[in-house]
Amino acid sequence: MEHVQEPLGAVPQPTLNVRLEEIRGAVEGKVADVVSIRYNMHVGVYDEFPEAAEYANGTLQYCTPDELDQAGRLTMALVGLKANFEAQPNLHQDLDWNRVKDALLANLEALESVGKMMKAGHEPNVYNFDDSGFDIGTCSKESPLSGRNCVYDAKAAAWRRATHPRFPVNGSAVEMAAAMGMSLMSLLQYQGALQSQGVFDRTTQSYLLTNEAYRHGGALYGGRGGDGVHVYLNDPCYHCHIRAFRGSLRVLWAESLSLSIL
Image (cartoon, rainbow, N blue to C red; front, side):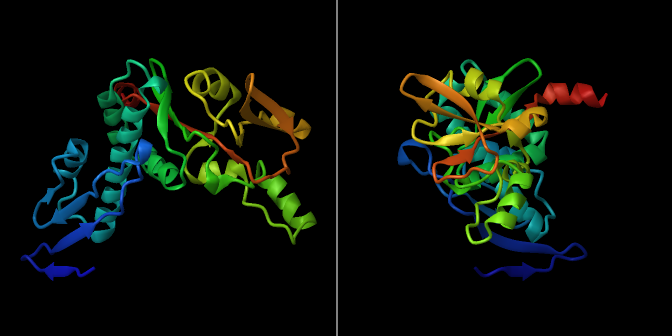
């Protein structure tokens, strides 16, 4: 990709034609259009994505290439989340997308996390909300492929490395979730919110958040069987090709965030 630099007086202004990576395929295999951002004293995005345009306009002027790249990632995360949100309305009935969008634009760290979840195949979506905020979590039908064959936490991973060095595992669920800026989904979130609104983990299993006081007895994992949703305790060092984890990220409503700063 060729970048052309055009010095403009005292303030250097690069003219960049940035081709962003393809948005994750939406449900049913539909792929959203590729978002292009052309920067030349102004920023414009395709009219098909008003949220992207709203974020870009007035925000990206005088950006460095790195800042423009970050803005592209955030735009992609927002557009991808909107596609998931609209594809599964059963997960958040009567919730207005604009409230979600406003909260994320006021919390770019959370939006970065959404982008990381999307890249790892978690298919993030809003699956729970209340008066103070909402939860974005792993809403892929099956436990994400990128996290499978993991153990529960760092302690379990260290034990595996020390005792079975010839049989490596795919990291730990707790650490991978933290790297994406979220925690593991709790038992209540998994059974009471996510699984009550859809069918998940029919052929896979997912590690869930386990109270540290009970971890010595095992780590929680869940799945769906013929007669409902089941949650069990298992050795935290256990790993297999059908088990990954489900994560969750709490985001406050924009109005709640404003009140907390006052």
